[in-house]
Length: 300
Image (cartoon, rainbow, N blue to C red; front, side, top):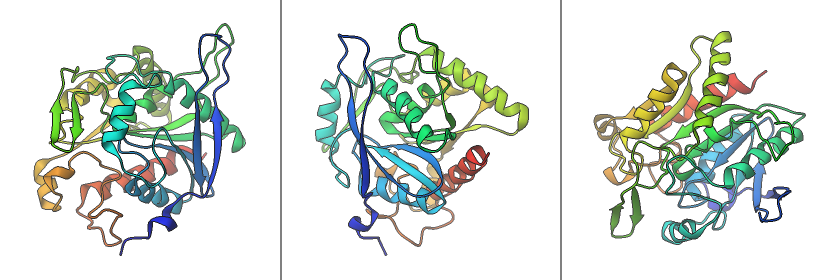
């Protein structure tokens, strides 16, 4: 049976504002919901919002012994509104949804949030899971934070996860279907320095663990996260990343409808999630893989 939505909701939250030292830049403020006991993991919600499916996934991470932090970028907790959020994101100054190599001011806010959360946990390592329009943000969060002439502050992110990265926008989801747009299918909307920072960090990880790789997921049939995007990740990061593409055959075998070939980690058999999920469901396999990865990366 599906869990009632009110049970899944996160009850505790705080408001986080990035400090601003430049007069021309307005601060960014968002609520951050949290729940759990254990090492911290930041989960970045998808374009439809902090949906029931997102909450279901976040609770499953909590149940595995982590403290989950959910920043709310737009909408309300437990609400699904793709069209409204799409229009809002188009005019937002925090996100750059068309840029090939810029992610917008929101990623600076996320870097500072990760530092704040790390301090809340005695300077602990932090996990970061990006999905959909936030799918590539975990790479940017790997970069050290620097404001003006101040010395850079090392990133606390030690377990980045990329799920169906969908920026820059190449297709727009509307009730009438997905509208193709002239975006760059190869780009990920992150600066070149983010790849370099991630590559250097991953190289250090492989010194201690030769099998280490950053997990990344997409469906083969996903128009919002085209295969060219994963080709770029392979070109930039090589053996530092584990690119998992769920094939059309796997999707059919697991009984996943074709219109559900975008969300991986938040993809469930029904609206709120099914407690009897098949072991052959590749989305459930991905969720288990991420849990093991988080445990390994955040344990020490």
